[in-house]
Length: 175
Image 1 (cartoon, helix red, strand yellow):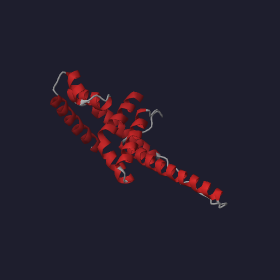
Image 2 (cartoon, helix red, strand yellow):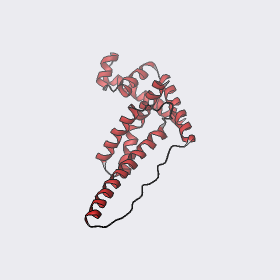
Image 3 (cartoon, one colour):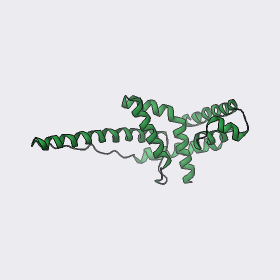
Image 4 (tube, one colour):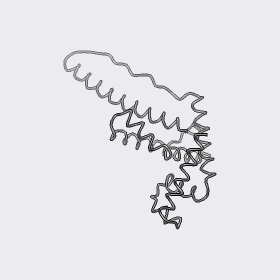
């Protein structure tokens, strides 16, 4: 069951990668930082092992938002450390506070779990060729050319399978 959830989270990441990058770029105002955060988000999805926690689209966006907040807090902590150092050098003392941490609510967790179950089911119900191409490309990380070689089809055949898979998965998530 856990491997289905892991695959579901990776599949969700794959489906929403482009819009997550847009989200991160809009929030940070910095394309390079957004790419960094997206890479960190991918790493977190690959080493996610907290059991049956919801991993839906909303969960990915929450993770992305948390990464932005973490990065902002780190900048604030660094600035505060530099300020404290400067204050110590000049005998000036100021107190600082940390913002509160928001945890995912039970309802959000349940909705996220349902979305993962929907996506896993949708992946399992893809036409065989589209499913295999999707799994090899999005979950295993093979290029279109490598998938084509493995499946014994043309690169444009892989692209057609991927288009079918992505259209089907988006529809499943919208329903």
